[in-house]
Length: 309
Image (tube, rainbow, N blue to C red):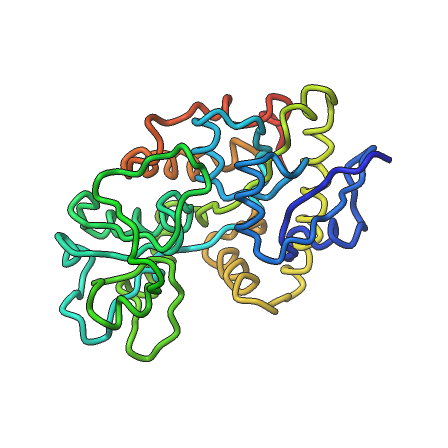
């Protein structure tokens, strides 16, 4: 069978694909050795390095707006909450999101990183005017032609966000994952679960894209890939129902089921994720990442628009 060079990180939802227990009908997935997933994102965005690739959602949307020659399938392989990913010093005068107005906040990697978009959205929902903040990036953007807003700047060369926060040169950091007793989350731990009760979804982080050249030459490839990822995910959800709780993600997904009564915390398909996607695009536009919301029919491969999984 023809091989598809594939980028993805091993996790519960795709474990059956990684082990080759499940394959797309008529194809086999050949997994790339890419220890740092975000480096693979850059290779895909800049060089179309892979046939099939896991990709952060806003990285994809930005790339699509800038003419990328790959198209998404509605496979949302990674989801997470980001409310507690904004961190401040424990003794900081910053006690609420609104207290960050006029201050400097570090952002891990680029401004278009999906985790950062969701974390800033949580700050905005908690009362912060995002335009009042200077956002300080620790890295550049995967999409080389993207230009961030005027209130975004680069961190000093060679200095980590943790160092800058501890030195008082930043007032907070987003998505840096600092493990230090002097650093605490700004928003309360229950903010994520309150959000779930309101929205009914866990924010989407990563999806799957396929090179347009392959999609155009192989009708049915998008459907076969979608169905294979869906079958692998179903096996993972079955394990969650049987009590799997090995990782924080496993436990979060199980709590999702307890709160919502929905068995599947990882629904695939456009309609099942419309609310999450429209919310993400709304925030990406508000944050100066997209120039306008993209029609979902233009974002996902046509033959997958009616699929559910």
